[in-house]
Image (cartoon, rainbow, N blue to C red; front, side):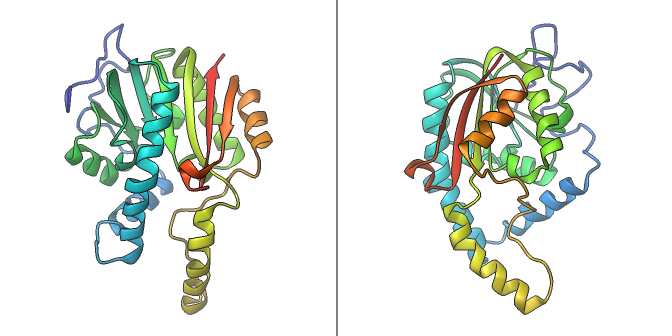
Length: 251
């Protein structure tokens, strides 16, 4: 169903039956974060930028096989699965479809247009994952990569409650969440500090990462308090020691 309509009837996933999530015509989220991410994705369009090249290489050589491995390991072979905060969906290009319907949700129109052109998903929604248009208990699995670290703890709790609302009981939540002292900080930290010193202004390659995970116990406590049972948390060579991979079920 590449580019086709997402079901909106009583057996579909959308709460709002008038929504047309296929091709980005839902109202944009009124948020400074949406604007920040539009700017970020536009900045990656230029192949002349060293950071753009490194970012693309990292997504294709590290993140893409990692997401494929863990979705194959934890997601059932059929059902509806939503990448909440999909961006351009490049990191999910190798996810095994089988009998799965893969949906990408993001509030950046710039990123979604790139995902649409690349045809990586069965459907796309421009929406806010804090208050998604998905029906209660309509989704078999949720995943995202490099998303959760951009939110404060109150925002994280709101987000996790929304995930639990839309997941079926026993549905899988799969999060690729950067650790506080991860390998990418070793690489990106020094040039960020150099650029800040030269410009005399604040600079980061990504919009603010305010909630990188400090420990596995922090993740267990947070998800457990919001109705998830954590199955495993891994931090290893598969993610180049960048992300903690959290697999949990909705209770």
